[in-house]
Length: 143
Image (tube, rainbow, N blue to C red; front, side, top):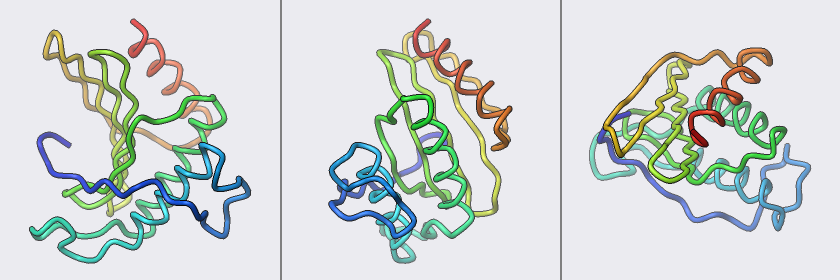
């Protein structure tokens, strides 16, 4: 999660078939971007980085749905050079990054650019854990 390249894919105008939101809605665009990231080729960044696999895409979709339910848009959605999908929400000097790895693991990073403080921990994707995480993320970002 630290210092690795990520691939930004332009927000698309089409949505995945399992998305009920129109492509013009903000969430339809994020889900379309997630779909585009799932189509990256191996070595997409010019190095040996693997493209996101199904489990990483599914986990990122679960997290994006939780953000949508909380009415909190991400500020960035990108493929990770470590293999997976990174979802970022940033407010001022505070950044919350959730990385959904190709092996199924999900971790979050809270970082404060002003102080240099960082906190990295695993994140479960069940409803209760996501509700707790989103509340702590909002507190961190707005604190």
